[in-house]
Picture 1 (tube, chains in turn red, brown, blue, orange):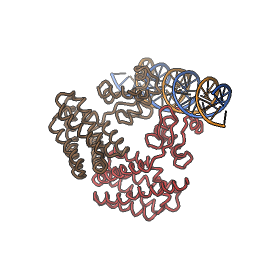
Picture 2 (spheres, rainbow over the protein chains, first blue to last red; picture 1 turned 30 degrees about the vertical axis):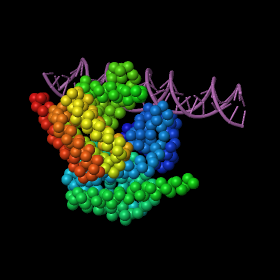
Picture 3 (cartoon, chains in turn red, blue, yellow, purple; picture 1 turned 180 degrees about the vertical axis):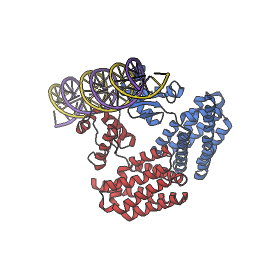
Picture 4 (cartoon, rainbow over the protein chains, first blue to last red; picture 1 turned 90 degrees about the vertical axis):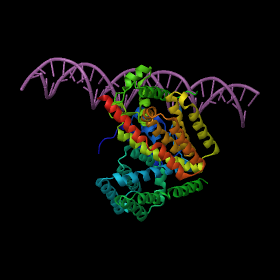
Length: 219
Length: 219
DNA sequence: TCACGAGATTTGGTATACCAAAATTTGTTG
DNA sequence: CAACAAATTTTGGTATACCAAATCTCGTGA
C-alpha cells in the first residue's frame, strides 16, 4: 500500500482510538500526551487533530484542549439529512455517468460483503460497507461531491457503527445494496433514489434507539 | 469586533490577495516568503494555508509548494451542482422549519437589494446577494447543512463574482429572489425548489462564457 | 549545442524550545 | 470549614532549528 503522510497516519490511529472507545466522547485530546504515546512530535499531532476536527470527530476550542465530539441527536440526524441528499444526488448523476468499471467495483464490494459477512471482524466489515457508499459517490465522477460525501460519511462513522453492530443483519444490508446497484445498472434515477431512501431512511430511528439506550445505561 | 485567531487573520489576508489577483491562479504559495511578508512564523502561516485549502482556494501537494487553485470549468460546474442540491435541500427544510424571523430577514435583504442595487459598489452588492443564499441555508436550522452550503458558496466566490459583474441585472436578481422568498412564505417545497433552479440554473452557462472569454484574451 | 548529472540551494516536514494563557493546587483568612 | 487568592503546573500557540526531499545551477562530456 502507498504510504500516507504522517499526519494522516496519526489521524487514522486517533480515529480508531475514538471509534473503539479508548477516547470517550467529551474527553480531552492533549497534544503532548498523544504525541508522546505515538512517538511523534506535537507538530504532526496538531495537524492530525485538525484533520479529525474537519471530519467533526473532535471539536477545537480556542486556547483550550480539543475534546472528542459528543454530538447531540439533532446534530447527528441533521448530518444524516445532508448525507442522504448527497448520496441520492450521487446516485442520480451516476445513473448518467457511471462507467462499467464503476459498476463492477460496486458489484465486487456487494459480493464480498455477502460472502464474508459473518466471518469478518465487524469493524472491518463496516469499513467495507462504507466503501460501497464511497464508491457510489465516486461513480458520479464529481470530485467535489465525492469529497463532501466522504466527509459526512466520516463524521457519521461512530453513530453508524454503533447502530450497525446493534442491528447486524447480513440479509438486510445485502438486499439493500443489491437494490441500489441494480437501479444504477438500469440507469434508473428514481429507483436509485428510492433504494437509497430505503437503505438510509431508518438510520435516524436506529440511532435514536442507541441514544436512548445510552441514556438508560447512565442511570 | 472580537479578535480572530492569528491563523484566521493570516488566512483572511491571503484570501484577499488571491481574490484581488495579487496571487494569480497557479502561483506557488511559499510558507517562508509569505510568513516573512506578514511578519509571522511559519507555524501559523502553515495553518492559514490549510484553512484556504479546506476552502478550495489553494491546493496542497505533498512535499511541494501549495499553489493557488486554478479550477477547471468542470470543477466549477461540479461544485455548482452540489451547491444547487444543498440550497434546494435547505429551502425544502426551511419550508417546514423557518421562523417568522428567518423570513423577515430574507425579506429585508431582498428589499435592500432592490432599493440600493444601482447605488452600491458591485463587490458589496455581491456580498449582500451571497447573504441571501446564506440566510436560506440558515433558515433550515440544520447547522451542518448551513456550514457545508457556506463552504461551497465560498469556494465559488470568485467564479460567481466574475459572472455577476458580467451579467449585472437588477430586475432579474430581485425577481428571482422574490420568487424564492414567496415560495418559502407559502411553505411550498416544490415551488421553492423550482425557483432556486431558475435562479442558479443558468450559472454553469454564464460561467462557461466567462471561461471562453478568458481563453480568447489569452490568444 | 544539448543532454545529463553532481553539487548547491530551496522548501516542505518534523522536532524542539519558549511563551502566555488556563487550569490546578495550595495556603491563608474570615 | 469554606472561600478566595496567589503560586505552580499544565497546555495550546508561536518561533526556531534541523532534516530530507525536491528543485535549481552549472559544468562536463558526447
